[in-house]
Every structure is written in C-alpha cells, then in structure tokens.
Length: 399
Image (cartoon, rainbow, N blue to C red; front, side, top):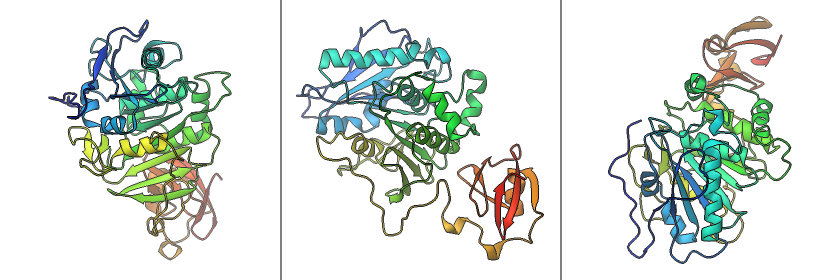
C-alpha cells in the first residue's frame, strides 16, 4: 500500500486539544509509539477508543482522516493511537501474523494494552468503556485485542481485516488475506477462546466492515470473521435483520445486536468515510480512506459513545428483510425453473464446477449448495465438495 502523505493532526478551530505523542507508558515490549487525543474538558470516567492504522500509514494520518476526532470532540471520549515502527515492520504494518505479537501478555498486543492502562491512570478514562477499531493490518490487530483482552475491551470494529489467528507467520499471512482461509465457526471460535484460556467473563461485541470489491483483503474474510465472533458470542450465523444503509451499504445484525457485518457494495480496500457536515458524515477522502459511509459514526453508536440512552439497532427499510446467513437475495439464487437437467444423486467436484453445473451458487467468495444454502467453502477450483440431491434443485453436503 502506498504511504499516506501530508497528513497532519489538525484540531478544530474552537479546540485547543491536539494529537500528542506519549513517550513513556510502560515496558512497551512491542516497541510501538503511542499517540493520544484528549478533547477539551474531557470528564473523568470518559470512554477511550484505540485506533489502529493500516500498513504504510501512521497515527497522525489515521487521526486526521478517519473521522473519529469529530465524535471524540462531540461526545467527549479519548482517542489512543498506537503507531508501528519501521524497525518492527518495514511496511509499518502491525504484526498481526506473529504469535509473539498477538498473544496475551506479549509483544505488540501487550504494548497496546499498556497504552490503555496509561490512559486510565493519566487521563481518568473508564476501565469498563474501552473500545478498539482498525483498518487492514490494524483491523487484524483489532481482532487480536478483542481476543486476547476480552477483560479490557467492551467492543471493537474490524475494518478490512481477517479473523484472529488466521495466520501464525509470514508464510501463511498472504493466503489469509486472499483468497482467505475457510474454517468452521467452532474452529474460529476456539482460536479466540484459547487466546485467554479459562476466561469466563463477558465478551466484547464486534462490528465487521468490508468492501465487496476489496482485492487486497478478500471480502470472504468478513464472513469468516462473522463466523468467529458469532460463535464466540454464542449466537447463530443467521442474521436477525438485514438493513440497507446509504452508499450501497448493507448491515447484518446477529443475535441481540452483538455482532454487526457491514458490506459496502463496490468499495475497495480502506476505511469508509463520508466527508461533510451532516451528523452522520465524517472524515476526509484520501488513500485508503474511501468516500462511502462514515464508519466512525456507525461504530460510535454501536459502542454506545453518544453520552446516554440505548444503542440503536439498525431498523430495516421497507425493502430489507431478514435473510439466511450469507444467503444472497432471491434474484441471485437459481430458481427451480432455471435449473438444468437433474444431475446424478451424488456428485463430487470442485466448488467452481458445482456452480457452473447449476448445483450451487456463489456469493461473497463462497459457494453455497442450491436449496439447502449450506456453505461449501471458497468458490474456486481447489475446494472439492460432495453434494447429494434430495429434491428438485435441492442439494446437501455429503453423500
């Protein structure tokens, strides 16, 4: 990714507060830099939001463009911005694929946790109102913080990221990004549970953002992350509601609004922003800050940072309705009248071949069996599935 340039932290005219580097905040085993933003008149017990930049970005750039400053000023919460050093990663990526940096009590994960501790002791922020959000490598590290420190974070946001512990080294990091790794919800959930063995307390709720045209980190990762966090939070992978939002954005709500998945149609790799002066507008369009919808506003509502009252659950529009997990709209599902000549009772083939033959369809990078809508795995020629026909245009996995 190209570096974001000429990005500086600019406070609003009426504000004296600015983004400030904190030079001492703990043992810092991950060798990260810490920056913080404290709005004027920040009250004691205010929330804190950790923001994690993407590769080739820095803290100042993410602060300037992401839109979070607007809501920190408006609703009075602190921002904590860790920054990667080139000595740790030549592309300035957080090392989300290194076990030494993604384990509780170690490396970069511990450094970020120490920044939260410093904010609590120095700024008086609340211990039970800490949140995290990040883009790309920062999104993957956001997932890691939610997994390794569920006792610290109340909620988080993963933007164009991957599930926690998708990779355990550079050798498999790129395949995690694209085409993605397919695991069962239980397998993904176990990776989170093993990040803090024996923990039985409350788990953070999670928002997942992804552009459907993201060719850097495949959109299939949004579904895998959904599987991970719905499993951890004990809710089904079928959304309780699906709602249309501005900028061709669809939000799926899971359980009692403990997991949200935002899919931004046609958006590439970046943080969604929506420059403007409206209440739900924020940010600056730049490299990897994409003019679509203000994700900071939606996340601030989801986190409950508005200063009181219940967190609103997205209300379905007249054209939106609950849909099966990861099932596309009816128009994307082959109808019985469009079915090819009935196939043999049981067929083993690549997922690509099943789709071509009309036994399955694909959506979001995955193949699904016609009729049963069972997910077969990634839509490509390398994944092979046995499908059994149980009725007209109705297929199930297994022979």
